[in-house]
Image 1 (cartoon, rainbow, N blue to C red):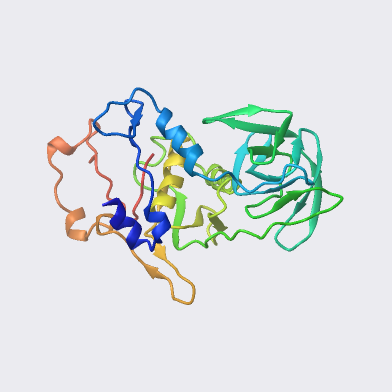
Image 2: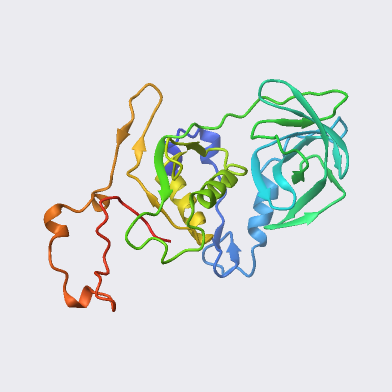
Length: 295
C-alpha cells in the first residue's frame, strides 16, 4: 500500500527503497522487526539520524533566517518562526528585515526562543540549523528574510496561496441573539477577526458597507471552520452567510449547504410540538431567514 502511494506520487527508484519502522505512538514503542516487540522509540530516532540528511547550513557566515511561520503574543506582538540558514543569532542583536518589495527594515531581536518538543525556551543564542522564534519585527511576513544589517542578503522568497473561499461574518441577529456568548458587538467581532491576521497569513478580512458584517476569505472550509471555532472559543457569537468559492480568472459562485438554507414559509408556519417548546412558551428552534450560528 505504501509503495503504491509512492508510485502515485511519482517517486523515483531511490525513493522507493525506504526503511520501514513499525511503531505505536499510543504505546510509545518502535521496532524494526514486526515479530519482535519494541521497548521504546529509539529505532525511530536512529532511523532519522541514519537516513534523513542534515539541513544545508553555514555556521560560519553572517546570520540569515527566512520567516516560514507567524505567531502572535499579547505581550510581544508578532512573533516570526523559521530555521537559521547561516550564522549565529543572539538576543538583542541588530538585524535587517528584507521584505517582499526589497526594502530593508532595521530592528533588533527583542526575544529569542528555541524549541524543545512543543515547548518554547527563551535562549540567549542559537546556531545555524536551529528552528527559532523571534520577537521584535512587527512588520515581518512569511517569505521575508532576517539577515545581517551590514550585508543584507535575502533568500528566494516563499509564496503563500491566495484564498479560495469567502464567507460573511456578521453580528448574530437571530431571535436568540444576546442570550449566549460574551463578545456580541460588531466592534468585538471586528477586533477578533483582525487580530487573527497577525498570525494567519492565508486569511483576508475586509470591511463591508454594513458596520455589522465582515467579508472573510480563506483557503477552504477547514480553514474558515478553524477560524470560526477559535472565535467561538473566545465566547463570541455571530452569524455566517452562505460561502462563496472564488478562483483566479473565474467568477464567484455561491455554495450554500442545503442544511443551511432558510426555512420555507410552510415550515415556519408549522405548529411546534409541546415537547419542543421552552419554559417561557416560545419555540426552541430559531426561524430566522438568515443562517446563523450561536457559539
